[in-house]
Length: 398
Image (cartoon, rainbow, N blue to C red):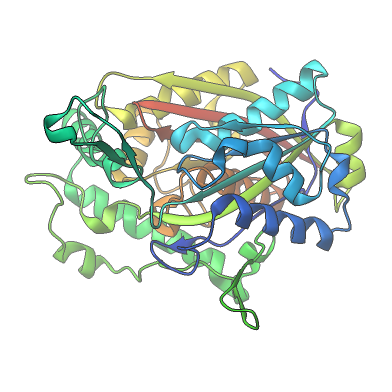
């Protein structure tokens, strides 16, 4: 259990998520994330030089990524601040925030900036020379599509891992459609009253399309209108499967950032000194081959155990749910109502740009907890390699 790491209230943002091959498709995710952070910091009148360490989370390669954390740090204005790169697939945000919290807890850092960026659009294609190959044929890899399609250890595509869990747990197609519909309705709640909930934390991403023209991505792009009738008409992606294209997430682009610091500095930076956000615990797990969705449960249980609470004591639960089957399995295993968590949105609906996904969900969980008057917030989500990461935060309000 951690006791010294805190997040200032509103000391975070997430951009809207752009659809695959959409508005952000041609932007270097590192420079876009840094430029967005710089504008966000300026909007708060914060000097980036106050951060003594930056953690950059990214999973899809970008030009100059070798320089990673130090480059991003310099771009936001913290030119003397070092940094490192964290890449843990869909758990990148969770791991990055925990690494920052551990640094605060141990006194290694005093004020850390975690920046999570990714662009699944126009993913890079890596080519390695292979002189011994037939005719010198190269070895190549697509950073996005190849990773979706095959885990080199588990031997299965991402969607196959969900189907494996669904089959073992007896999850039906109709259940997946029902949960997808519920998640879409929850997302619509975030759009009510001119997007009142999203405006609490969302910050636009700006793209220069010419010397004279800049466009701003101010709302999620690529969310499909969903109806029960429309879901029922879709065919499963895999033969005899339970997952349709409607019951799984879609690739996306975007970035987010979270400040992790001491209790005193968090109170100083908070927009409301009567709200305290403590990073309490972290959990992780790796499950059996090609059963990725199963990992979220023991990861969540580990985080809850380290926090000294039960799942019933979490007033807010958020999950990264690339497949509807994930939430159904978790709800059954943890004896919770599948309709009662992921309020205001989830990656199943608003998309999955990988590194920033969990960060946005954690941010949304904080804001929901504040609306509820405080309490514990549990986040858990699966990640490539049949793994998962989880985190418990405590939100106090006075």
